[in-house]
Length: 200
Image 1 (cartoon, rainbow, N blue to C red):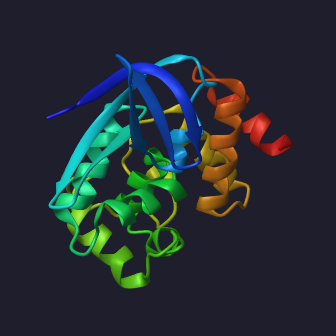
Image 2: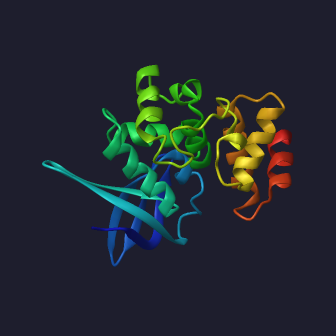
């Protein structure tokens, strides 16, 4: 199994990239939340990957962290009716920390806002993944309260929680923090992310 690929970024799009390795160009499908963090073409990068084999195709999916790849695998292997395309759609809507928090908190409304995801699929995500993403089946966090969902504290989670406390919807808060993280870099702390998100 191909678990990672490292090479030169030849090109990128909102949902994928082409990585050149040893004279070959590998097309890698990615969620928007990973693709938006890619460097400029010509840079060297490493993606954590999962290959899906079908009778008529072999498709390579890539992520900027092993945690994102493992969550993608969790979606397609454990949630009824969720295949690779839908999993990418789900992960393109919310960054991984917010997705995990929404699942732990049972926030059906936030999950149902993902393109192509209805209320029933959102409910399946919660029922089938709640105990697998941490927090356990008895989590009693208020829906949408990422900071209280049993998640480990990270700058991203804390910044999203702060924006939600100011009245932002969970998906809007996540989008604003993701944009701030892209602008400021991976080492940005919570305060910097909040300031940048509030200032657009």
